[in-house]
Amino acid sequence: MPVEEIIDRILTQRRDLTRESVLQMIRERVEKAGGLLKVESAARAVAAELGLEVAGVPLARGVPIRELISGLNNTTVVGRILHVNPPKVFVRPNGEEGMMRSLYIADETGILRVAIWGEKAGLLDSSRIIGRIIRLSHGYVRRGYDGRPELNIGSHGEIEIEPPGFSEGDLPPISLFFKPINQIGRPGGRVNTMGLITSISQITEFTREDESAGKMRRLQIRDRSGSINVVLWNNKVDELAQAGIGECLCLFGAKVREDLNGHLELHVDGSVDSAVLPAPPEPLRGRLGVYSGE
Image (cartoon, rainbow, N blue to C red; front, side):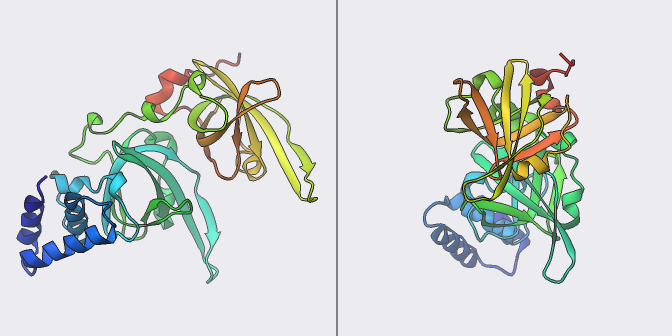
């Protein structure tokens, strides 16, 4: 959408603003981004911050993931859900319990981590929403633990699954972001994959050189293309303690390593996002198949 059209829409709904004041807000947004934000995207960000989101028109499609920067407020992003982590409960300084849940979404420009806070974190059914289109509105962008922009959805944020005005072809399919097991590449990298759990070993506990305690557990997962061993380390052993045979293990950013026999295996530590689903997400069921007990 041309910048002038975005400005006209802003002025139509905000008659207290002048064209020059809107242009100044756009210029400031571009300068703040250090040249990383296009003028059109800056205009969209200004419109979003002013609360001018109109369903069924391009402004409602939000800011492309690649052009998000820390500091944006009242931001809308649309993407396809790739991965949903289990909710985490924490205690605030005042003693009250809080809840947070993170997920990853993608559009044609990139992948984004989203943190959902409060009651909304408990409302998402990961087994039903992975692979579907989501619109996140009235969020704020901050720098995440890895230094990349991260969208936060708090008490004023809104979440829409399969929002109106979008079709499946508007966003890349989830299959583009997950590797079949037989396509997992060389050791040393990271990979997103998932598979049905076919075996689970006993937990192995050990003592490190610094005398701290550690633990490890091995699993095996498979899809229709093949199988691979998965090694869980330390806190991941506890987080995935309830995983069962035949369930679907989803790994986002697993470390690709080589075992002593030269076979590839996946290592999962605290830097890897993981979740267990009772069944594969609908869009990927054909790739994973059904566990037969073999």
